[in-house]
Amino acid sequence: MDDDFAAAVTGVGALSDPTRRALYLHVVDQVDAVTREQAATACGVAVHTAKFHLDRLVEAGLLEVDQRRAPGRTGPGAGRPAKVYRRADREVSVSLPERSYDLAAHLLARAVEDAMATGTAVDVAVRAAARQHGVEAGGAASRAHPGGGRELERVAPVLAAQGYEPVEDPDGLRLRNCPFDQLVDEHLDLVCGMNEALVDGVLEGMSCSSLHAVLLPAPDLCCVRVRAR
Image: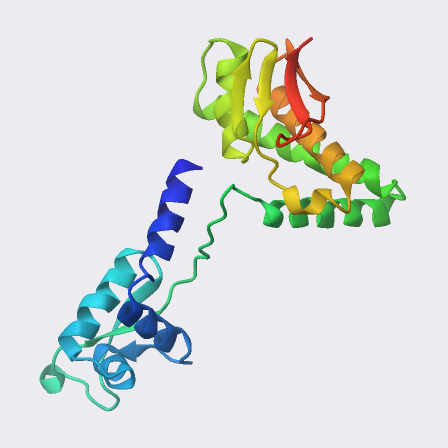
């Protein structure tokens, strides 16, 4: 989560400069990649200014650069290829506190497909999809960082990577953030069940047999907490 968040913040922060933002918007509005000269002309800035800002946008991961010769110019006398810029394929978004509505959409879509195929109740399918995601995340974390240690200490960074902001307390872990917060007002039972299943899946995937997820709603916290069995 930390590396992804830092990269996203860097990308968004790169657009704070108005000239850089104008150049970015021009590039992404074009069908084809553009040269720095074309971008400079379109935005009314000097070519060296356009070059500086376009290269900063490449460094921030918002643009990609290729090399392209002018049409009809080939062979030894064609000169050096020109740099051309186009929008990068990766998506950049920042949410504070962290939200994971793309994950919610993925889990709900998987659940609906399963419900349609098997006749399973949608709420049951949602919990199953969330649990499976948690098992996969927990298992991947265990394989990447094998070893012992207190189960609470092992599971906390994995839950943090899922956006829950865990904090240890005398009873286990309280989760300061709900990754699906805006869905709770209209779909409380569905979302809380999804959270409980996902967290329990992480515990299962990490073989944290002494811990389990419980529903304990409290103001300004996720409805789920991690407690000892």
